Structures are given as C-alpha cells and as structure tokens.
Image 1 (cartoon, rainbow, N blue to C red):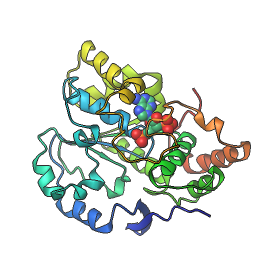
Image 2: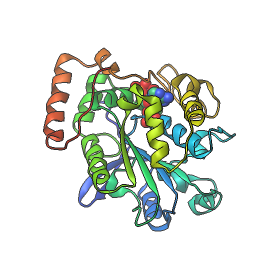
Image 3: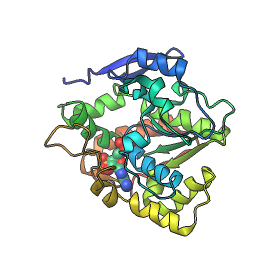
Image 4: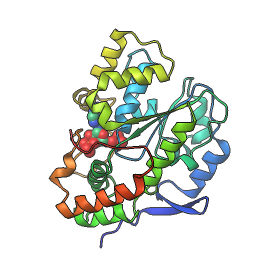
Length: 288
Ligand code: A3P
C-alpha cells in the first residue's frame, strides 16, 4: 500500500487533524502565537482542490480594481500555513504586506486564527466530495509523489487518511460557522461554474467593493480557466510538479468523477454523504 505517509497529526480539541508534513507543529504554533488578524484582511479558505486558486484570483482582482499586477498569485494571496517558511520568516514578511491583506488557507474552522471582532472576512469555497476526491488524487500524484491507484486513494479519502482533516468535518465546520458569522461567505464551486459573474458580484458585495459592470467583466475574463492557465502570474507553472500527471489546473469542470468512480465507489460516497450531511441544510450538486 503506497499510503500517504506525509502527514502529521495535530490535535484539534482532542480530534486528530492531519496536515502535510511540510506544515510543522512549530509552524502552526507560530501562527497561533504571532499571526494577528487585522481589519480588512481577507482569507480565501477551502478544503484543498475546491477552487482555492480560482477564488484567490477573483478576490485579488476585485481588491485591486481589476489590475493583475506583477506578483505571482502565491505572493499576492500567500498561503497562511506556509508563512513561517518565507525567507525572512513570517513576521518580517507580514510587514511587507500592505492592507488589504489577502491570504489563502486550508485550515478547518477550529484551527483558523480567530477573526475576533475585526472586519476581516473569509470567503469559503466548498465543492462536492466526489470531484474533490478525484481532483486531490491527481494533485497528490503531482505534488506529493503519491503513486497508488485510484482505488487505494479512494479508501484513504473515505478513511480520512488525507491532509487537512476529514473532508466532511471541514465543510461542515465552516458551513456552521458561516450561519452565525456574517463575515464568512460560504460559496460552492458548482454555483461558481454555473454563474461565474453572479458569484464574482456576490464576493464583491461581501467585501464591500463597489464593482461596476466593467470591473465585474474584467474579473470574470481574467479569472476564467482559459485566462488563468495562460497567464504567467496565475498558471502555477512555477510550482514544482511531477511530469506526466495533470497540472494544478486540470479540467475545471463539474462531474469529472464520473470518469473515475466505479458504481460501487459512487454508492459508498453517497452513503457517507447522506450520513454526514443529513440535517446540515447543505447540499451539493454532483452533475452539471
Ligand atoms: P480539477 O482538478 O477538477 O480540474 P484548488 O485551487 O483548490 O487546488 O482547486 C483546483 C481545482 O479547481 C482544479 O479542479 C482546477 O482545475 C479548478 N480550477 C482552477 N481554476 C479554475 C477556474 N478558473 N475555473 C474553474 N475551475 C478552476
């Protein structure tokens, strides 16, 4: 079994949360102690492979009046969990960030720095578990040198032997938080695919950005799959990845799971979905 041996366990109120080993306990401790949320901060937060990069680009463009700028997206919207790895350390790096600071994160709600009473906001994107599992399967092949078959990865996903904690706990923790906190906007990848402009408008309004139709059009155009894969600052080609497997931007569609799940796997995921999601008031679309 070529299990993902890359994860460490971190206790989150007694519950084990698995993080990739490149995010150490010391990193998390430093973030907890030294990362202070500021007014105006925006966090794009997701379970991995749910549309993080897409939403980073939308938020970056909205905050910068449609200007892409020179920075790579990973610098314009840096990943919170890896801030301690910045060349001069997290604290020095944060000094270089002008407001409004934009961050990305894959942390479950209970591990996120508290927003306290600031005006910081979180845009959380969720995606149906079948497409998330498939997208992550290709992602770990490319980024974590995972070389097991899909059948095996599917079991790892079902058994929560994957990074950033159980998928359903992640989604539900943020869903519940968003019901109570007006500074958390909970969106779904599938809705963004169906109504890109409508969701860009929703994000703009949530961030208190007065966006006219021209700005919305610019953001939609520059955050399209086609545009993001062709721009040097957004295509992620600078991130090392294994050759011969799909890149960071793979298909960008709803329902690709159908090309990989067996009927039995689909049923297993449906059963788990029903068990975890019942009474949550949250539903996903699995098809276009
Ligand atoms: P697929 O692997 O299904 O293609 P994340 O950024 O959270 O890692 O999510 C990656 C997923 O979002 C990938 O899904 C990727 O193709 C998709 N994606 C990235 N940019 C997108 C865009 N502009 N429009 C639609 N999907 C996008």
